Image (cartoon, rainbow, N blue to C red; front, side, top):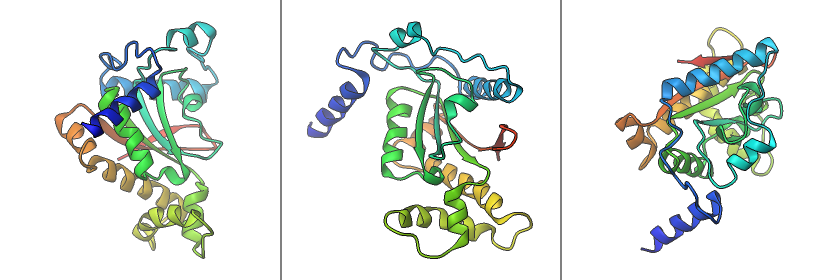
Length: 219
């Protein structure tokens, strides 16, 4: 009963005191439709034809009491990689979690679980990017000061995985890190693995190119 009370309190805090439309029926799109919306938005972004949807006062008022995002994005904290911009989406469209190197620590996992389980968001994108500083620092080696060491330890398996392979070490490690995090999330107990197995959550990996602005999926 105690755990249930804490969970309910968290929901109220995140959704607003009124609780109007707290979880509703979810965003009302399939995972495939959600992915298409993201990639279509990225196409507008790279072509310079951004629609900048839902960023005005009317949209703010419409979502003030509840949220129904259609996709979750776990991306890097890098200031050059804002998901709402590069996917050309508006307020309330994306549930975004950003950590250095798009690392899925416990807080990130809990945030994702909230969006997937309570808000019924059907799609989760793990978004890495070209020239990721966190991956580059891990590949360079050496001692990481303070809590940065936790980031390096999380990314290190990806660097080890691609050492000696043809191509750029950092770029290869970026892709491997996305793959590792995607696999971690798909297997995450007790919530995400269950939602993936039931087919209510799709998890995909992707890479953002800083030069072209293009987002490509990573198999």
